[in-house]
Amino acid sequence: EAKDGGRARYSFYVPGLDVQIRERLSMANLLRHAAERGELTLLYQPLIDLRSGRVVAAEALLRWNSEELGAVAPDLLVPVAEDAGLIPQIGGWVLERACATAARWQAIAPCRVAVNVSSLQLQAPESFSEQVDLALKRSGLSAGLLELEITEGVLLRDRPTIGALLADLDRRGIRLSLDDFGTGYSALSYLRRFPFHVLKIDRSFIAGIPDNQEDAELTRAIIAMAQALDLSVLAEGVERPEQRAFLLEQRCDLAQGYLFSRPIDADALGAMLARQGEVTRG
Ligand code: C2E
Ligand code: MG
Ligand code: MG
Ligand code: MG
Image (cartoon, rainbow, N blue to C red; front, top):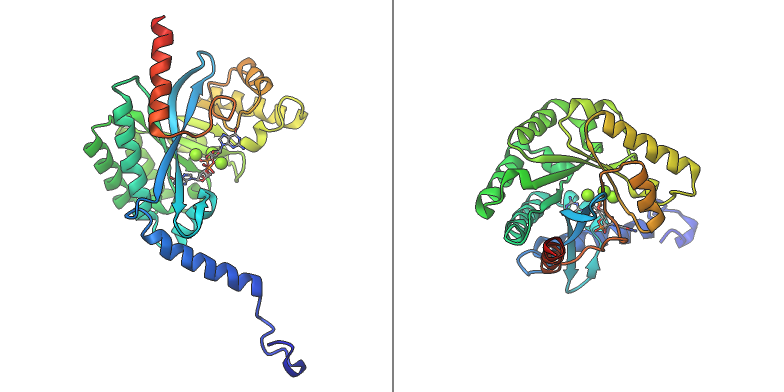
């Protein structure tokens, strides 16, 4: 060890880092078989039309219940999957499952499904495009009911191919959302250059409203900008009634957050849609 004879032979040895790398490796190995072992599931969080209060869409959120590791959060799981080259497989599974589930909801009420897309998926445009096609074909879901959530980081990397892919998805009627808006570079030119339909304001801005002046002003400005560009605007992480009131006043279109519902399973979302239908019919 480094202490040995005072010679710092392994001075580069960082114990914490080593543990991290080994943990990530074994996590990757477990993740490789997670889908076939039935350990992956999707939960769905309703996206609410603020004016009517109705569920108009649901975001699919990946959950991994590992026999060995317990519940692994997607924030941890996705980067591991990316490093291990497992994103095409897992991303494809998510698309298939989300589209199949959304197709079943249509018998209850119209509802779109939003799927998170890793930047790595977009960097293989042909195979991603094929996966989307296949998921729509197999499920029978119409393209207009599928929304793809993309974070802006990806738009910086490879403009020509990603631009072409997004344009193609748009032509096919698929909706594109810019996720976590405000956390990255937020080059506003993206909003004109790429065919986005929805802008999702990151939860970190919503957390401070209405009391934090700066967050309130920024949120107001983002909503106004989205309206000027003819985009739908959604607020993430709405937890309190005061936030909903503020957003309604600013004419924000959509919201998502614990105030309305936590992520729930596909059947629970279906039940929500069914209840909503009953209310409308009186
Ligand atoms: P995201 O796409 O921004 O998803 C929203 C996250 O905010 C979800 O966390 C959701 O549970 C959480 N959330 C929603 N409302 C509230 C609220 O009122 N308060 C708080 N504190 N949190 C709220 P989750 O499910 O842990 O997912 C984290 C991230 O992991 C997602 O952020 C997304 O970037 C990524 N992710 C999840 N599923 C997938 C997937 O299937 N594929 C890929 N590539 N990424 C995924
Ligand atoms: Mg998202
Ligand atoms: Mg988000
Ligand atoms: Mg987020």
